[in-house]
Length: 355
Image (cartoon, rainbow, N blue to C red; front, side, top):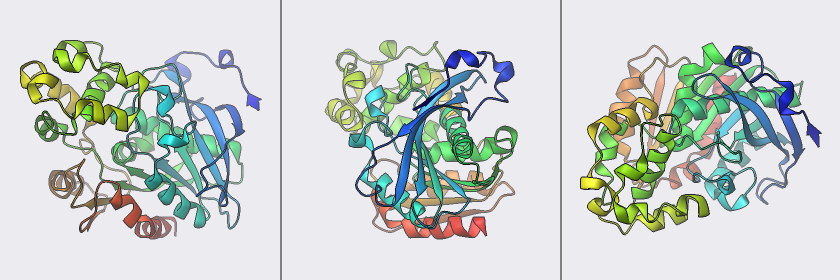
């Protein structure tokens, strides 16, 4: 195992421009059975930055094709897994979702090296800034830098492909790339059912089966804004269940909060507008111009991210900028089903960006 002591890099934001993407440790990873015939995997820890530019450590995977390898990089942004360390996909195959395996398999079959970050706080001691798009975005870009630091044959071109939380992060990375990715060149971003428009979305959640996502979002917001105190916003029945955020991952969290009514979830049954505004500030892509082409993919039977947010306001926001935006709607596809049904479509789109 390669280990570079963290004490060797300064902990000040002034040095952040030089160090993100530095690999701190690298070890052989055991891959899911769908991927082990296709790739050699490394589980890495690497330097990235928080939303204020301070240096932090993140973890993830770098998967190198066993055959047909070329010099291009695709970053895979996974969907929601949870908040706790055991919810880091690089270390737990239980949350290396089947749809992620299917998407990554096709990318590897095209000869692309895949960087798959866990996102800050998953697999490290830090809290996970869940749905803080700029946080995931930085770790995505820096995972591509890490892949190049592990393999000097890789070129500078990369594409980001993400689902749900990862689709949201991918769109933020598209906005951030030219000022953050250094020598890398972002060729495009594919976002499948990305989270967006929290100001419209959040008020619809209380009293539904999606309430666990909202609880996670409040704790994710607190990670970057300590003035947000979830325990003061959650009603008593919801507060009594917050232990699941550390003991479980996504499915356990959703099951724990799904039975509650809106008034059992939140004090007064709704979030204060000031908190919705803060969530929107950190969670909404599309507030800044995109810098590379975008592909939006959405199933119209999505039970987690309503398709009309992607097809309507998000597409309109992104289409107002100079970079081309393509929207593909998959009839009858669910939240995860859209990933399975778009693997070839997205790989073809990525190949065209690399041409």
